[in-house]
Image (cartoon, rainbow, N blue to C red; front, side, top):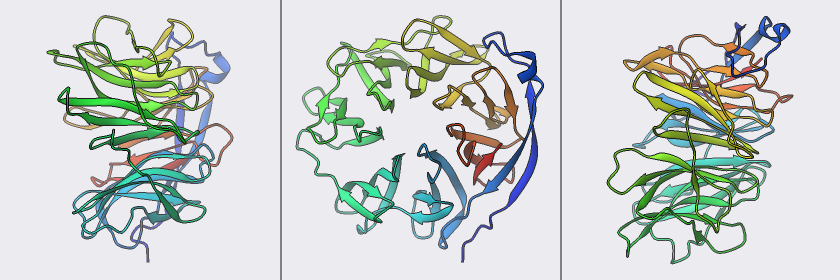
Length: 343
């Protein structure tokens, strides 16, 4: 029997006036939407604690996340298929399994770390089977970060000669290749690869304190640094088509940013952007604790804002006209619960 019971709670998500960055009409600013929150079931041997949704496929049928599991040190990968949870991971001894991306058709990129060896895989929800990836010798101690609809994979591996980690892209059906990196710099993380093959990642110049985001428009050429509204580091978290969502840090707080890859336009929003959909709607980060206390919100491309109760931390926004609107986790009960919203 599942440990958590599915619960639906109706709440009022209020549309508040848009910032000057959006061309919202008065009609859209005043709309109120009824949203239904659903707490997702967990597998039978899950434990209370750190359970959350991290991402989902475009249809909303396949939702990826993680949960604490009896006998494991770290939260384990969970896939919800039409709302029904299943653990992910191959059967290695002492295994800890992690999921990174889920794409159309229920294909999940993940890794199982065992006591004697590791396995890198693409799981098929339709066949309930794993395709173990044959890691080339050129990839030393790889870590995967994401996969797009074409099954191109991005991540980092170890370069023994340089003595540091390097960024790679592994095109589907071909051999991995290193991504060009600015001279005298290290790629810290690749945050996303779009279905069109554009990549965003964080880069730290040697000797510098912080990382800032770069955009690879081509796998053969040097990336370009993403600018902010002022000087300082930026963090691009998601790329959807020609739009990138993220944020910029400043001494007086964080400003959300939306970049257009076709030009130099940068649109500010009041909080950091975590995820975008194909309509350029965004979900923003939420905070809970000593560093801040405010929930996530949805900002539609017309400027309409939907606010949520305290403790709502959204990590994903679905495309319009699907079953769900957004997903993430709820911390209001002092334990993380995986949630989805329909608005």
